[in-house]
Image 1 (cartoon, one colour):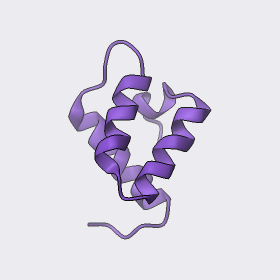
Image 2 (tube, rainbow, N blue to C red):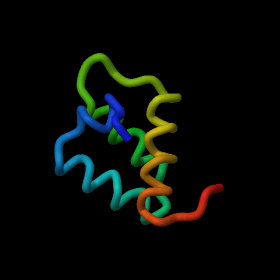
Image 3 (cartoon, rainbow, N blue to C red):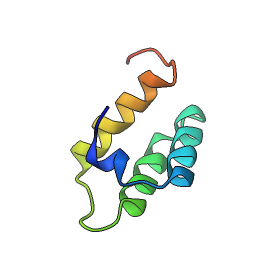
Length: 63
């Protein structure tokens, strides 16, 4: 996914987001993404879209 939110995260932030997603901590993953993406802070809808995309990319079934 060519997403501006995901593209703005560092490699370390991406790894931590994936770890949180896999641990079932998607709210914390969203908060991390919004804080780590820098200014302007991404909107919640864009963040949720990226979380869903990563969830599926990591081999989790769609909800």
